[in-house]
Image 1 (cartoon, rainbow, N blue to C red):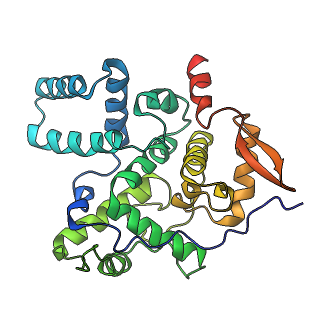
Image 2: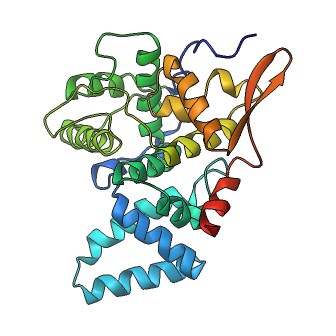
Length: 278
């Protein structure tokens, strides 16, 4: 009985998928910022509307004499990730319950990470390119040096055929921002390191990645779990991760057409309400 996927190829390149209007340099001024992102998620859970969240957010920053311009940029970028979150990720108002279940700050960063990837098309393009490199067993596949990142960015083309054309200084800041995200999620260790490795996953980010993979994929999602791929998990780890997910009780193996498949025991995110109730 076949129980494990073989990994296949990585996801396709996203070059020529987006117009210039869809691409931005938000990563140059706002990385994951997990503590502030968690604060916004808590406010959204408490108040229920982004208008009220915005009022409270800026009122608190006025009281602390924060720079309004900086706060506005951070608020805009972080809330964009939540407002534009696909239905395949946990609803932002459920995030406080998810985050309360995280064992470490890295777990929280790994939970926020797919919201960034889903919202920022340039980040998503670069992540796809690295997943392809990892799938093809490139030497130093997770090399995030300026040279490698810039090479990938320069290969990007818009839907109209024009090329990536940001200034060198802007590109350098973007590369720094991308590496900061990689450090937050455990791909890079240390401030000076530029070559990374697949990170270990906590149970909570694993369950989020599993739900995202299941909701984003078709019937064959099991053969190419996009949430695990985005977290740079090579295919030889998937079996172990599937078993770990099943051990939580939120997922279960079922036999379909002579092979084992993994399915949510209930809904892909039903475990969130159970954790919250506890």
